[in-house]
Length: 339
Image (cartoon, rainbow, N blue to C red; front, side, top):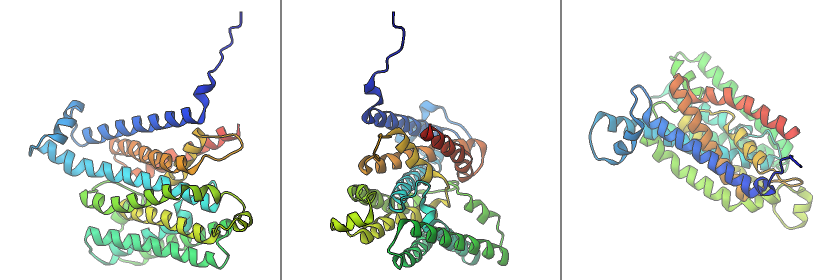
């Protein structure tokens, strides 16, 4: 009698793995949402959360859930979705599997603008977010302006972006050392945090994220083509330079708005696309971007949601937890891909 276990090929098809990944992300999102709304400085019963959300009462529990915990949750999910897609786009246009949004200088540029505002001005939240977004866009434009002289070659774009990012990171350190301000709050923001996020952050962030997600998915086919050799694409009539610049700007907008709202959240934009690629691995080919981009956004949102739930329980910034969890997870994925 043959007692060997025969695996059903259907469960290992790309479609089955995609459904499994969607189900896992939605489950994590659901757990993170319920946990984030129910748990905090004072806990609520899980079955009380729906009533607090939908009933029109003015209780303390309703205020805490609607005005404090729900905006924090939505800001985190928007940030995770934006960074997940921005990471996938960055890896594609730079052809660098270790690419993430910070490679274009946008993360440090946005952070520098916010830190400068914190150090020298007392500005409203909306103005601070606008300054951070402009700072990120300026840093990315600096990267692209230098990269245009080298025809936006993926390797050169990566090296230029790293240099611009390091420049603004050094400028942040110099600013903090030379300015006579209380730096504890600034250092806390630089670790990446969702604490204190309000509906104002949600309202200012979601239009950028929605526009970036929509544009990214609309141009998914072009990202598939950019995986080919530049000379071949040019012979086919595709304007590689223009498309690489446009898609890079989409990733910049997603990242700049997110960093302005939450501070730098490391590893999300790097790890989320790798999780999707690992789950959708196709022998001899890359996962189509029409699947890769939305699934990277969903995975990024699930990662931030789960990490923030743990961060709230441990009372640490979510950015630190993203680094502590993202590093080992990335190493594990790389080892599994090498097996």
